[in-house]
Structures are given as C-alpha cells and as structure tokens.
Image (cartoon, rainbow, N blue to C red; front, side):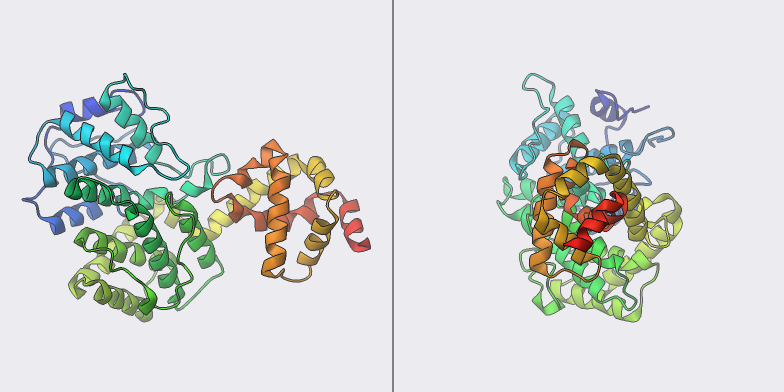
Length: 399
C-alpha cells in the first residue's frame, strides 16, 4: 500500500505501477477525457488510471491529489517520450518545476541538494497540493488550488514540447481562467451576492498573477489567442462549466455562453455538449463528497464558516484591537460611516490600508496579511463595532 505522507512513496508507486493505461497512442482527446473521468479537473479525484488498482482506503485528504498529480504528470511525459525509466521522468519533472520560479514562492526551499530526486519531487508535489482543511490557519490563496492543479499538467506539456517554459505562460493561463470564470458567472440567470466572492476566491488562488482581467464584460473582449493546444481549450470550457454549475443547474443562457466560448476558441459543439453532461453527471454523483458542492451554496458556506473564525479571532484580540483602532481618528470615523452607508473606493482603500497596518502589530491577526487574506477584511470591518467594548461605539457617535 502506498502511503503518500511518508518519504519514499514515489519510488513505491513506480515499483507497483510500472505502466499506465493513460497513454492511448498519443491520443490527446482520449487522454483529456480520462483525466476528467478521474475528477482531477474538478479538484476531486475519485480514481486513478493504473493497471494495478490503487486502494485509497484510509488515506487522508491531501494524499489522493498528490498521487494523482504524479500519475498524470507521468502520463503527460509518456505522451512525449516512449520512455519507461521512472528516473528520467522524475529528473525532467524536477527540471520543469525548477523552471517555474513562482512569484513569492520558492518551490525548492525544502529541497536538499544531496537528497534523492524522488524525495525532492515528493516535497514539491506536497507543496503543490493544498486542501481547505482548517482554512483559518492555511494560506487563503490556496482555497481552490486543487481545482487549478491541471495548470501544472498544461505547463509541463508546454515545457516538454518546447524544451523550456515560456516566460509568461503561467501568468497568461491563470489570468485567462479567472477572466473566463468571472465572465461566465456574469451570464448566470439567477445571480447571488456570493458569485462575486467566488470570483475573488479564484483570483486569490492564482500563484503567478498579481491581478486578473475579471473586469471583462462580454465574450468579445476575451483574448484567448495565446492558447493553441486542445488541452488548454478543453480545460477552459470545463472550468467555465463547473463555475456555472455552482447553483446546481445550467440555464439556457448559461449553456449558450459555453457554446459561444467554444466557438471563439475553436472547440466543437460536441465537446461542449459532452462537457455539460459529464460535469453534471460527475458532480451529481459525488456532490456529497466534494466540499465545494456540499452545500446549497458552497461559497455562502465558506463565507459563513470564515465569518465564525474571524469573529473568534477578533474576540480573542479585542482589547489590543480596540487600543490600536482608537489610536487612529480617521479610521474610527470611516468605520462608523461604514455602518450607515457603503464606503466609496477611496475610503475603502484607506480602511484596508490602516487595518492591515494594525494587523501587522497583532500576531493572531496576521492571517489577514496572507495572499487572499484581504477577502476577510469586510468581515473584520463588520464585526469590529460588535465585538469591541460599548465605549467604542460611543466614541464613534461623538466623532
């Protein structure tokens, strides 16, 4: 049995699974459809394409995605190289991840020069796979990372094809995915206030982009000419379809959007029809097991749970927070104003900047400084008047 939490699991994987049925005579379409069947595209893996079945009974949440990522990266390698030597693949995968150099994140910070290549790849894969367990203590930028993990596969294929990773490839594909998801949600017939939060969660989950193009208002504004691979195009369609499914159904206007998107990037109507059906079947079957779809409104659940956690943090630090906030007259006035009307953009930026400065001085609140942590600031602002002593509100009234 493979234990993906113990060192040496990659060597054990290749000892037990020397070949994979993933590679079908270099058939890219068949390869992608098999990846989708495993649930990898949706961030919820339910199977592996291996000749020897893998028993996942007793595995913890982050172990299955790690083995799945290794399995699919290896299958991608074999699409390009008829090479059965695992060592060659591992070395190529290490070179690929070394070429990534993500902004603000050193993949090799735990990699030791004298460690076996397989152990170093284990550490990298571990850093790539994230879960949303204990979301307050984890980096908010990774809340939906596993739904974006196929980007690693696309980038690896690009690296194998070109012999290098184009400088802006990762940034472009991340921005394109966020833009497509944002635009797809704008087409929803029944919109909710949580759709905007879903966009922000995806924006916060990217690793290589400091901003997104989610302000795009119509499909004509999308620029997807950079992508020529069928795998890239299929993935874009599936991600748009998954985001539209978040309310449990696909209306006519939403389906029309998917077909128009496919037309724009040169994907057949047949693929879109299949994508809609496969996504519906998969999520319907596994909905109760997928955290993202395990509630009537998954983003609302995330918001509600996060609100409770933020309230706890504020309560534990309310005395320190009160002292720091009352030291800023301007911040107090703005917070008071926010209880009676919506702040304008300039005022919001001032509040955000001053609150982040305060969070720097309180160790328990540094969670707000993590990538994506700014998503929680509205929750913080909402609870400050409630959680601090009544004298705080009196002071606000006197200003």
